[in-house]
Amino acid sequence: MKISRDNKAAFGCLLLLNVMGLVLGVVKLVQMFQEPLTLLGVLSNAIYLLSYLALAVYALWTYGKESDKYFLGVVYAYAALLGIQLLQSGQAIASYGLSEGLTLMINVFNLIAFANVLMFANKMNEKKTAAWYLFMAALLKLIGELVLIIKLWAFITPYIVLVSLSVPVLGFTILSRLQRLGK
Image (cartoon, rainbow, N blue to C red; front, side, top):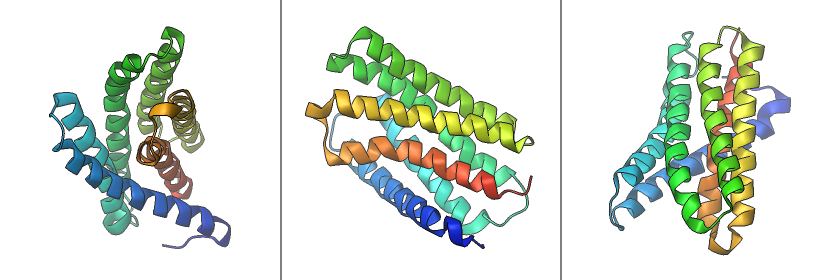
């Protein structure tokens, strides 16, 4: 795998953040068993870990493969993560006393991000169009997470900030891989 000199720093940061995401996934899974189990909690934590695991497997063993099917596996894992977070955040953020409008905005951002990742997967043969969809998905997710962090600052811990920001970082990491696909 060759990385241009201009992209080495960015690639290193993304790689470090994704390793941290994988570690956070394991921590989330362990913490899940220390609290009362809920179906949504189990699904969310499992999909979070599996999304980062899919990226790690892809990066370590199938990165140089010619076929896009391995890459699409990572994309669909990311879509599953956004989909489960859409369900989870709709339930969770309403209970923190956010205004109805702000809760609706966050949920709409999450829904659009989820839909854009699915459109990204469908438009892989049109690299520029696909990149636009994924960029918008990651950007909307990032904006939504930053708004939540700011509005819920009293309830936020460094762990929650890392988990929260790791999801848009995963989207930007997938986007950086698309830029190197030969389409």
